[in-house]
Length: 202
Image 1 (spheres, rainbow, N blue to C red):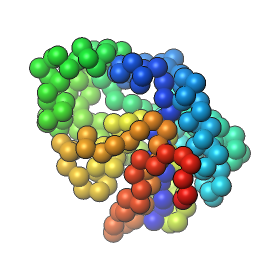
Image 2 (cartoon, rainbow, N blue to C red):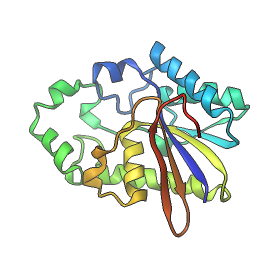
Image 3 (tube, rainbow, N blue to C red):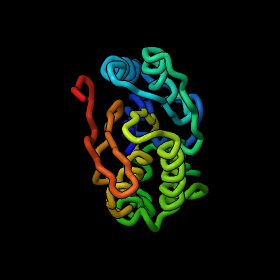
């Protein structure tokens, strides 16, 4: 089974401000986020990575950049790894969104929720699983690849492969600049690590 390193991009000011980024372009890593990207590269450059995949949004590609440079690998952009399409909520502050009746459904019953003008969590999870399955099929057993994308998408991918109900996916913790290790086989899937933050031993 190939081993996937699911990496959340580093910190940006939207994370610090608790603002939903959605698909907004031009959101770059802040100073701490760049430090996180450098720390990831320093830790992961020791591994025999065969490929680096990333969401095309800047915060993901900027996190992938130092690792790609350290290993001499190309960043393979995959639109299917993009962050949640939150529609009309894009760019809004969480403190304002929490006042909306629909926010309770985001937390309690996300499987029944669609973002106004955006996608549902069910559609999002299906999109992400298609992309991860495509990446998985492109690699031989025991190959190691990095996949750099976003918080809720990573949690939804993990929930799918370990059999966690979609309505429970928010119970998983995925910090900026963290690595979760997922081994996917034909007959079983193994979550080897969750929310590792450099420096760590692999």
